Image 1 (spheres, rainbow, N blue to C red):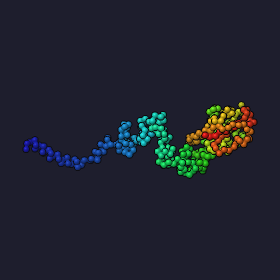
Image 2 (cartoon, one colour):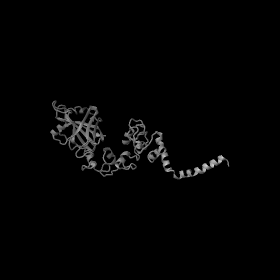
Image 3 (cartoon, rainbow, N blue to C red):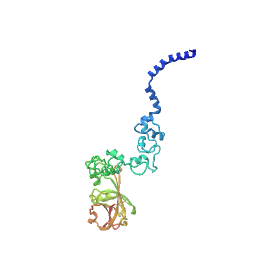
Image 4 (cartoon, helix red, strand yellow):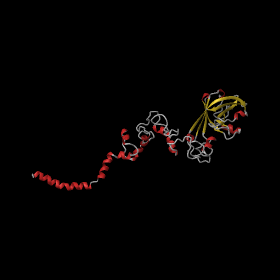
Length: 335
């Protein structure tokens, strides 16, 4: 054996125990952890939430759980929500319809095209069903989970709780409040804010919910708008809602609505009258009526207050102008 081969053999015999010792004591788990810190952390953190391929598409790095809740494009959706809704996390308006993605999702509309987010196609937005405790996979449009008489689609419209019969906990169930003109999401005798708008004759005024038919009380209310006579119908509901307004008044009389109904006689059959209501929670409703008739009657004529099994309104004002001899009435039916 040559001298060189002897040296190699000696080195091999010396190093072999050291190599065996190293492998026996090496922390392979720690080594794997070190590698994953740089190569696997994104996949591990997102596992079950966001696929790595989706993150790679947008060149997004995930270094901690907090990163999953970031809103990169400031549209109101965090990273997980962007993935779940198939939106672009770097573009606040994925479908370019001038509504930011988060706003569309919150309002139940698709952020990637037309239509609503409604997996069960029951016309109840998925987000509302989830927040309210309903099943977004069950068609319960006409359901009445809380047995208050207000069906689920109307619970959505009014912003009431579909699982609680008395949302505002004031002792009256939601349907009774809606039917009687009260606000189902506000305590006590609170009512929505009502308004009348007649574009043809330039009318836009608040509707004051008069508590008394006493003349002095009505005149006081007329300073602030037009008035709904007590115990008449509710806008949007079956029955005849009688709404009165000034056609003229004394020049010294206070108020900004002394001539609000002066052009009421210009309305013709088919003209539109719009009543709107806004609840305390911001929910708004619009009721459109078409004029069906017009006449001049005595101040105490029963026709003014004639009830109806349809949603109707009767607009009333003193007539002729600058007198209070008779009443001009305009009747309209809800469309």
